[in-house]
Length: 247
Ligand code: ADP
Image (cartoon, rainbow, N blue to C red):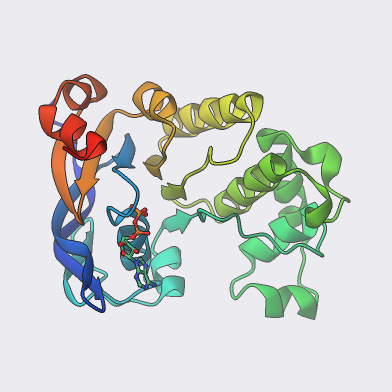
């Protein structure tokens, strides 16, 4: 209380596809050092919001603020370097690279090209192995990414996101398509990393997980926030129920 700061905010963020306002004048704040959740019915604009914040999509209007810096329209690379890491709803790994190679690619300053050029320092390899152990797939380091389970691929993607030590980690449906024991591992890991000071912003459909994991939740409906607060507050908000039931 009193000391919680806003780490990432949007003001009037708007993005339309044709006639559809996927994100519609969204003013949102996420809190530093917290596990922030972003929830809402299908099609409410969560992924588009993520893509605007991380520079994958240019918004039509509005601003994105990282602490006090205006990062609107920065390139995805520059935003990543400024400290925002992210994972994707449909897991993105390099299928024909090994698990370890996927980790090494993630930390290279410009990704794939440098990796193929052969810059892999012993320190980086050690760090990659350490991170693989942390996400619990170090025994798979020599396997090709396409040969491990989908849940393990999600853990790999999470591990590779963490390779650059981003202070802010945005996860798009980390538990989607993942079995319960791996979901539990992801939850424990998020908690640990949060205890170490990382801020999380998580889009997730698994309501039980969101309510258990998050300190601060923003609920989207039709491209804009309709409720904000702790899990307790969110769960008893009639607007949230209405949005989900489509009343
Ligand atoms: P959510 O992540 O909450 O499910 P999305 O951001 O994926 O929501 O989608 C919000 C709305 O924008 C939906 O109506 C969706 O169909 C539309 N939309 C998203 N991306 C595109 C796109 N690339 N082209 C056209 N419409 C899109």
